[in-house]
Length: 289
Image (cartoon, rainbow, N blue to C red; front, side, top):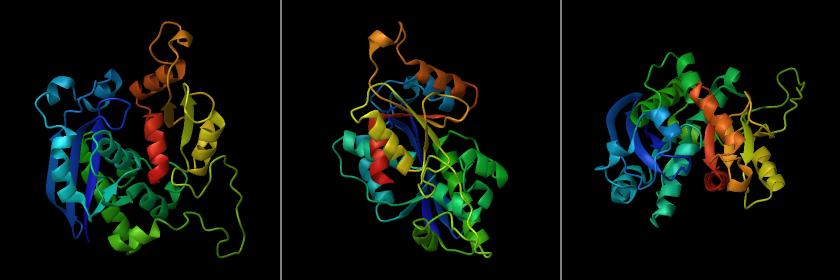
């Protein structure tokens, strides 16, 4: 059972602004190699992101850029099963390649959140974030350090392989099958009333949009629902993803961010796991999921 696990941290809401990468190599259920690096994103650092991972512009001033690391990453990842938890790390790598005019890295990507949802029924609908499932499995790690997160995601996969007696290659095939099998041994079905597609890879997430999008809001909402997200109109305790479009400064009442954006940042500051995506990241996530 040999595979890699990867995680990244970003400098701001644009997922191409990678400022740290961590990769852990697993063989037969154990970590055999670790690699991590800070990355100069050649972009600004948002205070919200700094509050999450603690990395600042000063920390990366002498770090290599993503373009300088591309050949190393390509050598490490190409053709290898590479675990990532939720689509966002894969999106970040793809966006960074595109943003630098570089060849897309062709790893054999495997989302550990999909594995979690198919292994532990209590997390099939919701609660399958890395911190939550790691706590459930008593896997201790320093969250929001790229290498620590990569190791934790890999350990979760190892536990799932043991739980289900499946190899990593088996899981690469299993994750494309439905999470929910209608009609159990008694032949009855259970109706689940949700706005999001229950077979979507992001089922259980609640997405909200703010700002002007290149897509129509209704089209963006339909795509999000197809991915499994419930789509909300306001940021509240149920919100897990905020997609930020272009902001019209004349409508911001003197602020630089919309009220939804500010509310999401307040929730993150209070420890609520909300992800903030640019529209470009949202589109890339749709293309890759």
